[in-house]
Amino acid sequence: MDMNIETPEDQNEENSRRVQVRFKTKLKPPQKVPSNSIAIPSNLTRFGLSSVVNNLLQAVNPEWKSEPFDFLINGELVRMSLEQFLLAKGISAEKVLEIEYIKAVAPQKEEEPSLHDDWVSAVDGSNPGFILTGCYDNLGRVWKAGGVCTHILEGHCGAVSSVNIIKSDGLKYVTVATASKDQTLRLWKFDAEELVNHPKKIRSFKILRGHKASVHSIAAETSGNMVCSGSWDCTISLWRTNDSDAAGNQVSIKKRKGNNQVEEPQLEGEAISTLVGHTQCVSSVVWPQQETIYSASWDHSVRTWDVEMGKDLSDIFCGKALNCIDIGGEGSALIAAGGSDPILRIWDPRKPGTSAPVFQFSSHNSWISACKWHNKSWFHLISASYDGKVMLWDLRTAWPLSVIDSHKDKVLCADWWRGDSVISGGVDSKLCVSSGVSIQ
Image 1 (cartoon, one colour):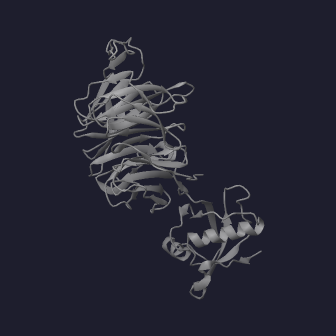
Image 2 (tube, helix red, strand yellow; image 1 turned 90 degrees about the vertical axis):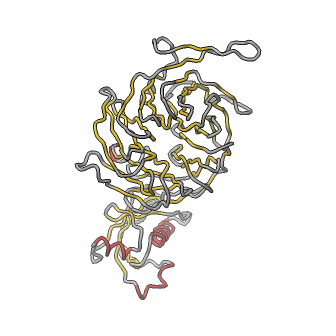
Image 3 (spheres, helix red, strand yellow; image 1 turned 180 degrees about the vertical axis):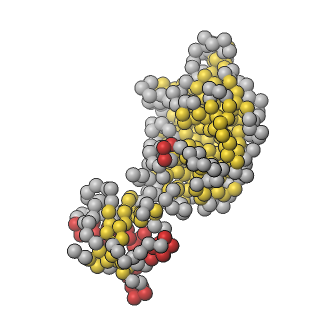
């Protein structure tokens, strides 16, 4: 059965021909429309298409409440009018056109920001129970939902430049790592489920020394037994995270409290190996597989390191100083990086001639400070920029799905939290949370 659907955009109907379409979806009822073809104006944009789908859903279910949808034709998101899209892609409108609809991916709610005492320079949202932040006031902080600070990590004597939640499955205590401009890394342990009435100050159980300049980035190996760090001294160091001082390269130190009580021992650790090759600051490191570390540098390169051999296996040069890197996407193999221009670049190292990015996104208007793949989607990632914006991207379109402008100044860090929230920190001293992102 063919149907004609009227929409708000039909006011220009005399200038717009009609096309026969069939909507399909992987969504389950009650979000599934009838499979028959219908005639719609070709001048509809995704907002008009969304109106059509909601009308069809309401015809079947009067209780249906409208929600926004996105639309795919031949696997590509529609970001212009239907007619413009068909013309640009050379698709015939003579046959019934199949259009897939999915839930629109955009934050639905902005939480109250969590205020810090200085720039928020680092954030990690990999644990669904809390958010870990680093700040230019030399402190790390642990935040629960609702902007409640439960723990303060005290001990660095320089800005905290990077934070990392180390894997803690099944353990009562969580171990986290911080890196600082004071040239050290510190390891901390705390009970994330502990109920506290006010922020509890804790001190690190281990200090890792050895870098000759500020430590810019830190990443944990998947088992949590080791971390790596990138520094302004152009090197990447590897460290053990255990809290035992059995190894010969560790020293247990004790500090006395003012009332003459002895605090818990504090260990010191040395790097077990160092990766050398970058010629300028190592700005970002990730360690997604046990045998491989990826790094980005101000020397314009992305390098892939064989951990066991201690050598870089491949280099990608992009002509720009790089600030951030992350690995994800299809097969967890795509490399995303951003730096000293507004372009977010993505490479696929599995393809020959990997020096050319397979995707380039250029909607920011200043340097890119952070990028992060969604851990359950091949298509979605976020980027943060000195332009004060966080952008949500889908590889199936060149335009951002959403622009989050919660910050009033440079954004320095961003991550996903709980799969449906985007978190970010910046020069305005705020940790911002935008929730309700629906990713299928």
